[in-house]
Amino acid sequence: MDEIKLDKYNKIERLKDELYDTDFIVIKAMEGYDVRQYGDYKTMRQHIRDEINLIESLSDEQYDELYPIVDELGDAKRTKLMAINVYDQSDNVNQFMLGGAPMWLDAQTRQTLRISIETYQATGAETVTKWFGGQQFTFPTSAWLQMLNALEVYAAEALNVTEAHKAAVMAMDNVEDIEAYDITAGYPQKLNLMAS
Image (cartoon, rainbow, N blue to C red; front, side, top):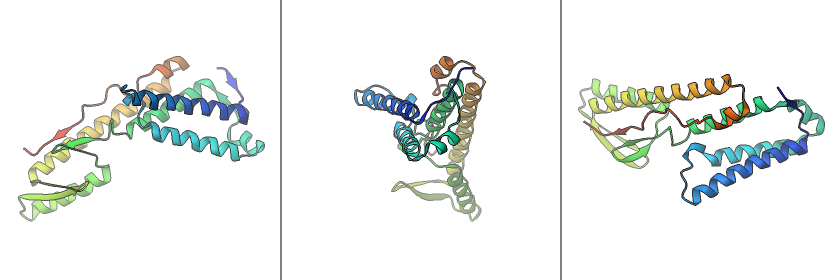
């Protein structure tokens, strides 16, 4: 394993190169290319800028303490794992359609909604109205619960894919393989939920 020590200047230059790479993604998106494989590049760009600002603010001693040795394999793994996390949190994974409207409900919101719907159902309500993103949705209580079940299964399957991608990257021992690894593969098809 080739281990190299990057001084502050070289580390900042490497991060600026990564920032340029994300600029390239933005340019390709503006030219009409499908760049979904890169996840939320705005978040990634901000992360890189934040790290550059941090390094610039450090003394040489602080830098040496926080960035002692960088190995290419470990750096490639960290970069790819960050990209997996960004993609996992993006609309490429965290989105479904409800009555034609794109949205996402995190785990806490899904749990709260389930409790609410079950409470309505227990009191004999046949339909429930909920508001999301300024839109009103009214469905039978049984339809709400079926949709929540489908969404819960989708979220669990998507998480399994994300964790499998992380495990695959961690098991790799070649920088080129890591960089070429497709973090977008294998995710379940997004749900298009309608009341039935």
